Amino acid sequence: MADRHEIFTALIDGAATAEEVAKSLELDAETLQRLLMLLCAAGLVERLPNGAYTVLGDIVPFVDRRSRKYLGGFVTHMVTSAAGRMPVLGDHLQHGKSAADPANADPFARIYADASSTKEFLSAMWALSADVSVELVDLAGLTGTRHLVDVGGASGAFAVAALQAVPGLRATVFDLPQVGPYLVETAERHGIADRLGFVAGDFLGDGELPAGDCLALGYVLSDWTDETCLHLLRKVHRACTPGGRVLILERLFEDDRTGPLGTAVMHLSMHVETLGGHRTAAEYLSLLDRAGFTNGRVRRSGQEKHLLIANKE
Ligand SMILES: C[S@@+](CC[C@H](N)C(=O)[O-])C[C@H]1O[C@@H](n2cnc3c(N)ncnc32)[C@H](O)[C@@H]1O
Image (cartoon, rainbow, N blue to C red; front, side, top):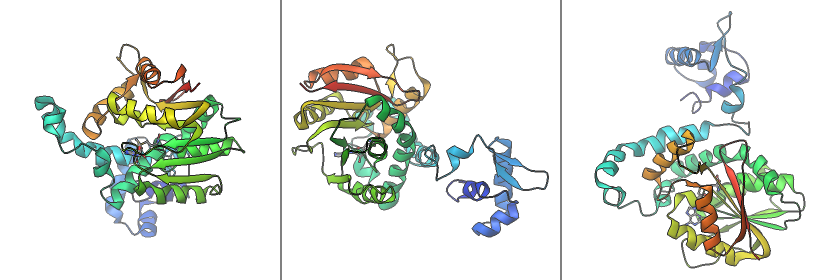
């Protein structure tokens, strides 16, 4: 709520009392006062001796909409869309996924059903991927790559990090048509519209993907069953030029699937939101092998999204 009404942004721009913030944002002062008291007790906001509130320094990068580490979009997604799906978890437990939720054959039809849900989802994906993408691009070593195709690249978090790190690179995001305007806006905002393009399409259909010497799949395979992943990875293999590479960017379960906790949380949440879930590194390496790629290897980041790389001979 504090994020949605830009209360954190107002306090980052200058410490202020509840009355001052209420006036500038046209909010109810008493309700805002109570919300600020809660944020204070939760350790996100501090009350100064003069009665003004300010956001604690450690918290600022995660609540400032201008920061690459901003998490508001993802938290909003979890407390609205993901939590909104949780009531069906009981039915899943009692009757199984296919009986409990037969209408969810394509989760993205629901996610992109209207403009507000589309915007909320893409904002969550940006929040989840923008910061870690800088590290993943470094781990991928893209120097010398000519054309990166980011399959299901959403509004372009990974493509932007790649283009900012590698001057000669060109990138294309391939995604559903609803995503196009958001990618175009990203390209313009970052001044890279001459190097970042968008191709609309459906990777589940019969059509082929745009060709490139590096194709990336970030948080895409975890939405789908092994069968769909193989269909998609074989398409990626056909679109990849000989000598090129595929990058899989995903959370990874430990080998015995006992953690990490965040991955187990998302694995349960995705059971009611998508048709997929998270895998171990060995499971992804096996899918890559079955799709025809060679020399599969894992590069772990310092965060929760990791990288698997494989080659096309
Ligand atoms: C979980 S998001 C991942 C976004 C981004 N790659 C990242 O790592 O943050 C999955 C992406 O796959 C795209 N997608 C889903 N179904 C698709 C389809 N049938 N064809 C093309 N893209 C699809 C979605 O629009 C979305 O951008």
